[in-house]
Each structure stands twice: as C-alpha cells, then as structure tokens.
Image (cartoon, rainbow, N blue to C red):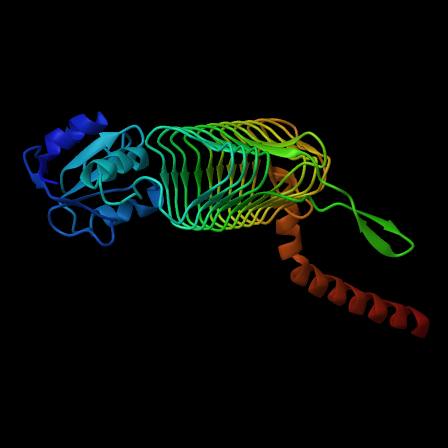
Length: 345
C-alpha cells in the first residue's frame, strides 16, 4: 500500500486533521506501529498512546479534535481501520481452487459455481454446496445438509446430516454443527439415551469460531439467527434459539431450549440454564450465571445474575465483609466486658 492520508480518509469517509499529503505505506497496532504506518485508537483508555506511538497517522473517533500528528476523525475508528486493512492486503489469504482429487462426494451431491473443496473432504449423499463456497481440507458434510453461497468452512469442521447453513457464513476449524443434544432418561440409576432427531439452522452472515459445538434439536430445530457472531469454545445445546445480530463470547454455555433475543451480548464464560428467555438488547456481563429469564433492554451481572446496579451493591457489600467482621468482633468484645461489669455490681 502506498496512499496519501487524504486518499485513505476518502476510503473511510473520514476527516483529516493535519497534513493530508503524507504517504502511508503500512498498517499496524498503535503500540507496534512505525514511521509510515497508520494505526487507530477506539478505546478512550488508549488515548495516551497517541502521544507515544511511532505511527505517521492515527484513525480516531470524532471526539478527538487535535493530536501531535495527523489524524483521520471517523464515526467508528475500529471499522474504518478494518476497511483499510482489507484494502492493504486484499489477497493475503489463498483459497483452494476447484475440487481436490481426494475429496469424496456422495450420490446426488449438488455443487454450485466456483466452489472450492479441499483435500479429504467428505460430502455425503444429497447434500448441496452453494456458489463461491470454500470448504477447506478434512471437513465432513452429512447427508441432506445444505450449505449456502459464499460460505467459508475452515479445516476439520464437521457438519452433520440435515443441517441448513445460510449464505456468507464463516465456520472456523474444529467446530461441530449438529452433534446430538445431551438428552438422557434415568431409570433405576441407568441413563438411557433419548434420540435427537431435529436439525440445526444457521442464518445468513453468521460467523462461528473455532471448537464451537451446536447441538441438533431433540425435535424441530436449533437456530442461530442472521448476523450473529459466536466466539471460540462456545457450547449451544439442543433447541436453543438465538436471534439476529447477537454476540456470544468465548466459553459461553447455553443450556437446552433457552431463547436468546436479537442484539444480545453474552460476555465471556456466561452460563445460561435451560428453558429461559433472554430479551432483545440484553447484555450479560462476564462470568455471570443466569438462572432466570431476563427482560429486554437490561444489563445483568453476577452469580446468580442480577440487574447490574443491584449486583454492584451486593459486590461492594461482600468486599466490606472483612471490615464488618472486625467491627462485629469488637462490638462482641465490648458487650462481654459490659456484661462482666454488670455482674460485678
């Protein structure tokens, strides 16, 4: 890449403050950047690094008015920087071409235009793969599964039978879609497996991280809504329904038949019990244990999860317990002293 700062600002619809004629030749993080690089700062806690970075220019939010070096003011510096990275390195990742000779395709498999299927991929009978989809080596696609257009399935992903995956879906390595739900009937101390005969339905523009497991429904379907993004190491149980444009961060576990609304954020290591409803626009903070339904538009935290204002008060009280213990001990000692004096009288 070799562009003037002004040209880059036009690409991201930003406003240049400073010398727009300087030449930018690379992109980098704010701590690692050197002369010639452009970087970004989105979080206010990193604003002090503006003074220290070696970058030649910085993408900032609109709230930053001046800086010791040229800046591009934008509405969303993180997204603007992502556009620049894509522009600077459009062909960095190579995709496989065509269908590898070791791939195994069953009877009645439908393959769209410009599909890439890597080495040792197995696609079972009557499955279909949409146009421009890339399936990397070592993947498994079960019978009657449908994968949409423009999908990217990384190596060693397993997609079992009768699964539906929409368009522009990304699935990272090690993920399993459509594994059996965890269902057993216990009779006289023995656990008998309950058949899981439902499906999984993944909407358009979903991204699923590495080593995620999404279980098939006992009946009907487990659903991941359009635009939802799922981080690594997430477990989604049978008959769970997640709405559109939600964020599920690493190590979240969602128990069976729970419904999660649209635009929900489940932060790292959140656990949800089964058969509850999480409303639209809910935020559940990290390491929370959710045991009850949460109404729309609220923020929860803690174990068990509570409205965040109440949870903070509870946490503050817990932090005060050592001091409270000392106070109670002192009061107990004084009471014993007073009682002893009264007995003497």
